[in-house]
Length: 300
Image (cartoon, rainbow, N blue to C red; front, side):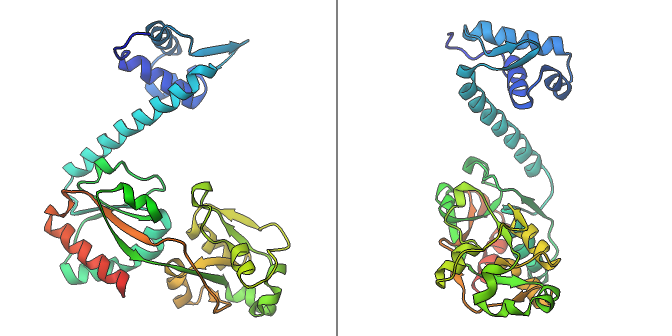
């Protein structure tokens, strides 16, 4: 295997093929012919001196030894895309760029932004909702709102708040199921689950809340499972059942009467939420104002 890098075009063709699963799909994505994709992959195989594709009749897939190579290559291309997007954002005239967990932006930050503008005047703010954490190297001109120990990977971070969880339902659901106010009956009721994924296995779920009271876990399967807390809360507001809600995410709906807290017992989240930033972020006066404002909002 040669030590110098293969041609970028051949790596791009291989990455697209492996991600999309077919030569035709890769050709459509890159705007070339299927023959050109096949030719570029062949050039890459010759450069690496190993087969990257195995064929079974008319189907083609990654060779077993090429799977890890493709995953690393995909991560590299994703970083290239991030760098391009970041440069475009920096070239724009937006005052503040905030990346954050989707529900944290939607349910906690966005309802408060009018307070920032009332204090510091109108500002152009870009909110980028994503579960994926940005590369710390790309954080010089933006903030990141995130959860837990991942904040340690960024150059600078401060705790925003430490959240707590409790069960909620809609007013309509409570009318039809008044026993929901008696926690002994909660395991029997329809419920909505929130699952952030395996990397957040310690985040409490409804079963965790019930067992903390010595109650059994829900007797039935959830009516729905959501990777976004905001989506789960909408399902609950529409009467699908009960769910374990975080105070920071449910407070607006509780205030508007769309949700009802059905127990005063709460579970603390294992870790706090954080705001993170890079070495150059605070060179901007508007960014300094934003940081001071959001820390004040979180403390209150």
